[in-house]
Picture 1 (cartoon, helix red, strand yellow):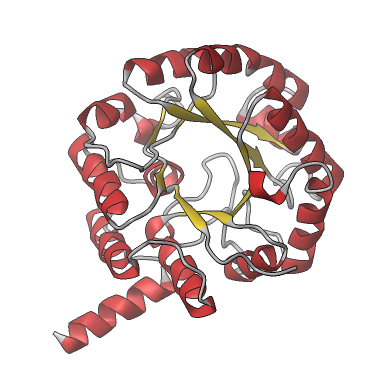
Picture 2 (cartoon, rainbow, N blue to C red; picture 1 turned 180 degrees about the vertical axis):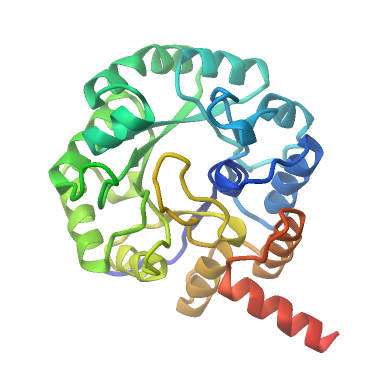
Length: 304
């Protein structure tokens, strides 16, 4: 199968990235982060999450972030919502696209969502009903596609079943997430082939974490399987607060560098993303986890 000529990057740093960082940032900084990423040409910037601040304190203030945002025409700013209450809060903040999430593994669903997989889907029906009534686009996440911290191996048929259920409920795109970063290229190919037996590749996105250093290899394997949408996080921010040992998402800068080398267009300015990654990392008191970002910043300093 031929690799795609262009790829859509879904930037998840302001949500999936920040939610697992120990430092909490002021709303003004979160707004600037989202706006800088959008200015770099990223077509989708997941800007926040309407979950309980009790469970994910870093996402407190997401409503204020959306109210203050200056949105760029043509850029999408989805928000993650776990339930109807979260959707109602998102609507009041002016959100017009949402993301919902389920798990491919039973153990992770019970630990993360405090319910079974079947119950998690049932809980989302009201969310889909209200979102549909308001004409809102809904994106779906399936977590733990390659392994679970509680159940171990996850059969690809389980991923397929959850992806099909989300698609049937109305998700226009399904993001398959290797939440704990254990997946390998061969395994990822098998998952993609299983899921795309039912769903077109155009509706599938991949979401990799880099716990075992396999993130970019898995992106390349996915590209070779015809996948053209990838989630990534500026500076490699994040992890998962409910997945012990999971490290950050693959870094947007590293994915962009790979795609640039393959001649695949994204419409994103790598240099601007690297500068933003360096900036947000310094505010968090850490270095950027992006290899490409560090190299670009070192080259800029040496040349300047």
